[in-house]
Length: 105
Image (cartoon, rainbow, N blue to C red; front, side, top):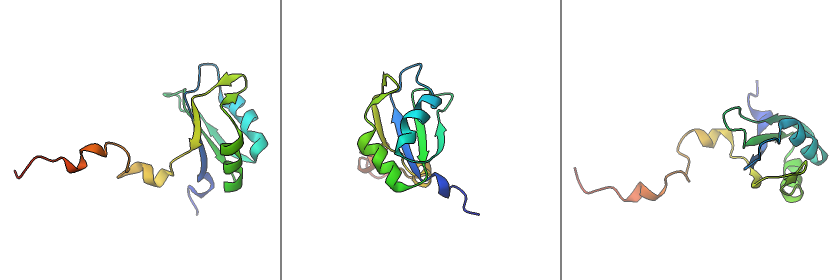
């Protein structure tokens, strides 16, 4: 079984205004290709993940979708971090303090 493989071409939409829902996102992004999934987490309704079936569709959406979706303006659209890397050791989160440990204990 190839668990998780279908969902690697994911788009991350952030800064969504209230009123913009998954159906509107589906309608907006469907023109770029086949959508496998559109997910808006219940706890963070200003975020959404849109999963495409192919990389070329994801790239097309990233380049051409714009920030106006169904009459609403979102803050941004970017490629989502792959699930594997977001779990552990994410490079960007809190990277500042790595080298600044106080002297020998």
